[in-house]
Amino acid sequence: MDAIICCCQCYLFVLERFLKFASKMAYHHTSIFGSSFCKGSHESHYLKCRNEEFLEEAGSVPFFSVFFCKVLITSSVSLASFAMLDMFYEDAIHNIVSVTFVIAVLSWFIAEFFTDVLGETVSTLLYCYIADEEIMGLEGSPFVTPELYEFLDQINESSDLAATGIEYTGDGVEVGIPHKIDVNYT
Image 1 (tube, rainbow, N blue to C red):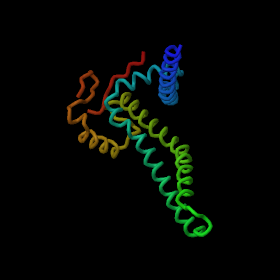
Image 2 (cartoon, rainbow, N blue to C red):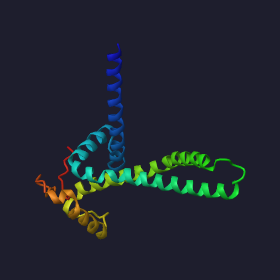
Image 3 (cartoon, one colour):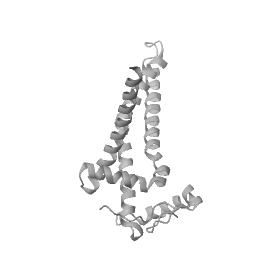
């Protein structure tokens, strides 16, 4: 009976993780292209599969941007609270460090609520970028400035993909960061 319950929990955990992933990517795709949720889930999955190498390199950007914001907010609030408690309540509070620790924990959770929006924004922008690159390809996007193209070329030159000589072209030959991938949504 324990083995059956364990298998059911494992199955439900995998199903939950898949549905969270599918719904997040499907919401991005649905909001960009206006397709239905199921079609958006299907197309977003294959868009992610086609750009897997690029997303492995750039996929850590949302995590690090959110994490550093949380650390910055927590440390600044903790330092400010410690300084203010030390200045105004030095004699009234026996242990300022424990109060500052509680304030740090609370500020971490509050920062987590607000930085989740930042993480979703960065993930959405990354998804929009790969969708735009796939649709526009070498023609260039009307939404990308020349400065951004220069920046992306610098990243492409210094990335691991460029070092290995992998780049994507429209004819399916793998040669850097995706510049042209044929769109076939039929």
